[in-house]
Length: 138
Image 1 (cartoon, helix red, strand yellow):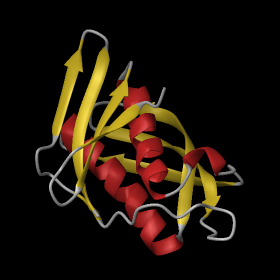
Image 2 (cartoon, one colour):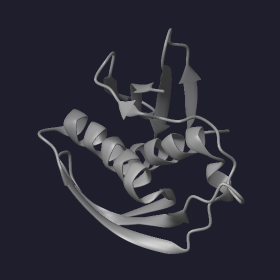
Image 3 (cartoon, helix red, strand yellow):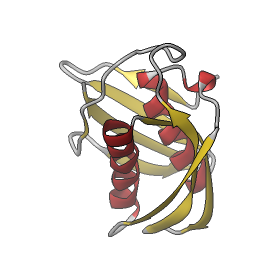
């Protein structure tokens, strides 16, 4: 079972992402983003990239996280599969993203994600863990 599902949205695409804890939610969000753009399972973690981000709160950090990953894809064509955090709080993360450079010859090209939006964004802690809903501009 995937750690996310697609939500119907008129012009864009929405994701509902699940995680048993804050760390799993961020990892699953990164996986979901790249799985929309290519088959994330096919990404070979050949390269590592250090990441360090700050946010005002969990919501802000979550959106910064997805925006940073999208920025790295847009500017360097990096696609990531695995994420490991050395430091993680509600407003700070420091870790390593593992993946490689997108190659249309070996990676399936799915959707082009243009932006991560605030529109209808939700982040909620439930009994079973965390759930986030985010709309992506495609």
